[in-house]
Length: 440
Image 1 (tube, rainbow, N blue to C red):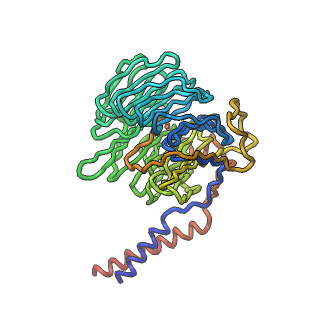
Image 2: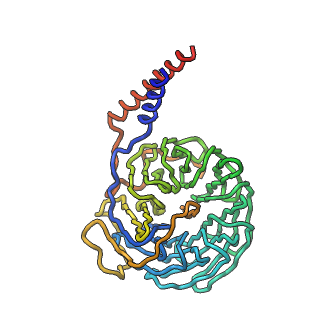
Image 3: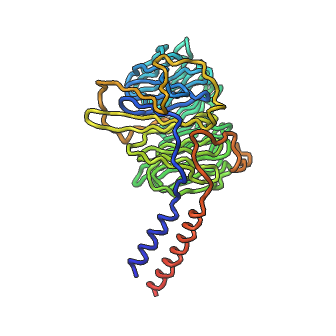
């Protein structure tokens, strides 16, 4: 009887675990030496990547605009609307590159740079370093000011005239563009991620005492706590859009909440997920394992990418039209990564691009590849983070400003899915009855 009970429970768990109805259809892929540490995509479809020992800019069709050396691995990267790219590196540097890859500026901080952001016009950029300092720069002027927050900074966001940060001492706060401290909120633990949308700020706090636990906060942009969710486990990332807050990690599920704090859905998923992006309710997650997933606003798993290599990072553009997944492989003589890119609108509606590639023209296939011989290999590090992206009633989950199109596969739930759920529920009922008989 015990064996029957265990088999029934196992089958129920398997059948209740969501299965994607389709595989992703990539618009293009790009492979190169070493691994992708960071990704950022603007609304024109240009993708900036910290790719091994280089910073890359890829055009919307996957051709390489430039590839230039960085001062160590670019652990953080951000791209402006007009294709200026700022990178924060393992070598303690903040670097700014022109739209054609010319190094315009660099500044050496006191330690590794985990977080950067840049204004839409590329004029202002910020960095948060492991030395605990927050830095503000102006293109053409260099360092404007720096402020000591007292602990390593894992996240920073530049939003108009305000700079937000979160650090290793559990402090989240904001500065004005002039360098004046606007507010500080002490949340304890370690502020691991922050994300901004409108006048709301999502904050992930990790507690590593006897066991790892996590708290996710929603704050107003003046520092007021709106609500808090506790998780018994390691939440790795959070992201925020105008209606939803997404939560992923090593917690066996993907959670989405409406901004009033009520749950939108909780989807069982037992592989690790270390990075998440959500736009208009559409959620992209991956990292830490060999899978990336894409979920609709109503919690339906649209597709699952089961890679034979480790997923390193995912990213979406601000509008949600463009998204990318990067993987990596480590071998003694070969370290390689691939970026998989999707344009979610039909090709006929794709906007024209203004900056031509400075490398060879793109191939006619869906894959654009480049290799670099003699690149040094690196060892995987599990502790390296990669920086990641209103209180009005949420919009209808069925509505989105980004239509499905080229590169977005998925369909409504099939009849077999409903049969599976019914069968799983029957198995659960049988298991419960068997368990009660065993007790009696």
